[in-house]
Amino acid sequence: MKTRPLAGLVLSLWGALALGQGAIYESQGKSGPVFSDRPSPGATQVILPPPNVIAPERLAPAQPATPTPADQAPLYEKLAIASPANGDTVRTNTGEFDVQIAIVPALRDGDRVQIKFDGTLLQRAFRSTAISLTESDWQLAAAENVEHTLQAAVVDGTGAVLVESPVVSFYVHRATIQRRRR
Image (cartoon, rainbow, N blue to C red):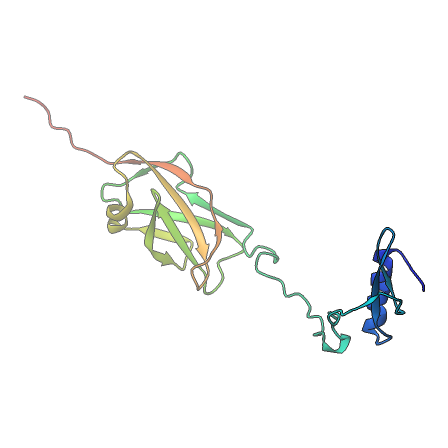
């Protein structure tokens, strides 16, 4: 009877069984179980489950990986609020003022510019980089202070943000009429 170390024998016998070459027998030796491909007195046949083998012809052909949007180069290299610049003062009594966006490359068809004014996303999206904020935009979003913030974002047709500008802080100056005391 041939005997081999346990791990090597089990693997080789399992492979032999998988190829249909015969049965495996287990008997007790001095230092533990002994496995063999030939029966011996007192040995019992070991029933192994079929090996887990996948035939190569059943494997699906490898598909080339399609790049995800995160793998592709960014659509826009630069987005910034050009006017009002950081630290500028805007003069308005009604809350109406103009915002100019700098974007490279130019805004693509289907993409829109969204504006956050004092942290509130305005309800309108703009098709141009020259934007006029209205009195109703002011009433919707403006905080009750002198310093305000703007941030621009370019979104695609589904509303997914493609790029965001840094936040710009600016000041608003409103003209007032002082009455003379008599």
